[in-house]
Image (tube, rainbow over the protein chains, first blue to last red):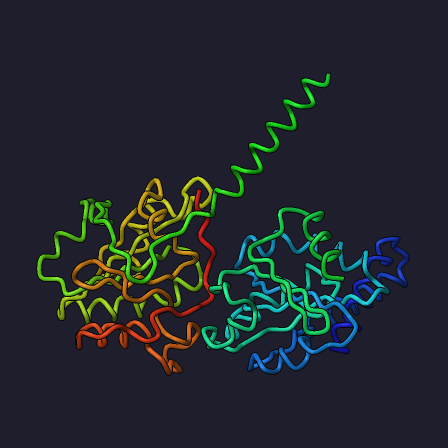
Length: 177
Length: 201
């Protein structure tokens, strides 16, 4: 995860680079090389995800399940990024769990992250046995993504399907914060 | 003014009470009897359940051209059909996509896809989602296994590993068919899986 933070920092740097002195531009080149190596962490079992994010104390954790091939998922990501910026410094953590395929990561999620910065952690969940872990998301969830969870001190809320807009997402966060 | 306010209030009450009575539409569940349908296949002809006179059951698969999950399962759907149609369980694949939103799912594209991937089963075009609205599959691929009386016996995934056919441990549809063959109800009767969400109008 450190590498992701570093990556976000580099992305910020690249934003500043738009002001454009030669020196900063050199930094910009570094950005390209560094981000090319930025690969999200792969979690092979749902338990790892559960241990890491479902048991967090005293913070709200927003977990969004998405994939680069899922159009409605990709469409709602800017709203998540906006929310993550708004709640920065508060006890709200944003986690983006990608269900992209491991064997095509280099062509899917790696370039996607490169061109679409995330204000939060991105992990790839490779646990294929969805039928076993789906119940931990919601009793009524049957596997269609996007799906978003809000977890605070073990209390869980679910939003199945995409948020219509930023307001709907913000309301969801407010109801669970 | 007062009358207007009352009118608006009344209208709101009516709307609210209506809303509380309008439950979200539900599709076929385990134990429901499915109505026969007639949909155009990629061979240009219409197909129905009734044309399979010797059928012991039907493997209805909602799938489409471009969803990566549907594509990962194409070969496995072909194998299901090749193995089980001989035993009386044909695959009927239905594309539930709204072509207005997904032009890559048009009838012509379906014909192309079925040729390119050498589909051996009927791949049917549900133009106005008439059949899709009855089943209400939530994503592609999504299987409904029917017995010979067209009663739904299993709903869900083909197996437990979309990304690797070689690593599959549980072949849900095959086990369900074997249960039906023994006159038993499949367990599990329902499974969950990731897929591409189906937009239903």
